[in-house]
Length: 82
Image (cartoon, rainbow, N blue to C red; front, side, top):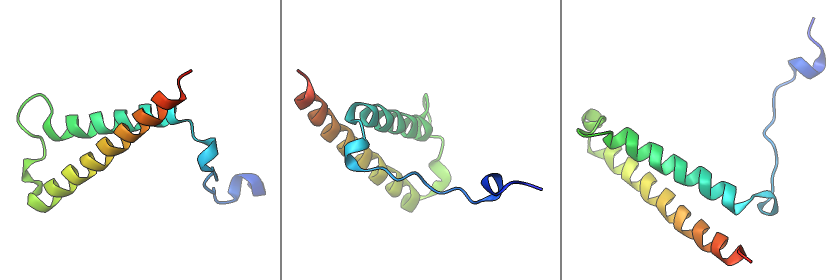
């Protein structure tokens, strides 16, 4: 039989804004944005052309939100440089 530690449901970690390193977050968001755009366009013909205009618009919306976050994080990181 499993012990209670193994069998209990996992809970998300609680973090505060102070715990988040802007440089690490910038790296994460820029990697996500790059992967999203590579997935959408690849090395030529768009890979997800059959998704339809609604999904395509949502992907561009997500890309713009990530790009804005990256720009904001760059400003935070530049202000923190000694």
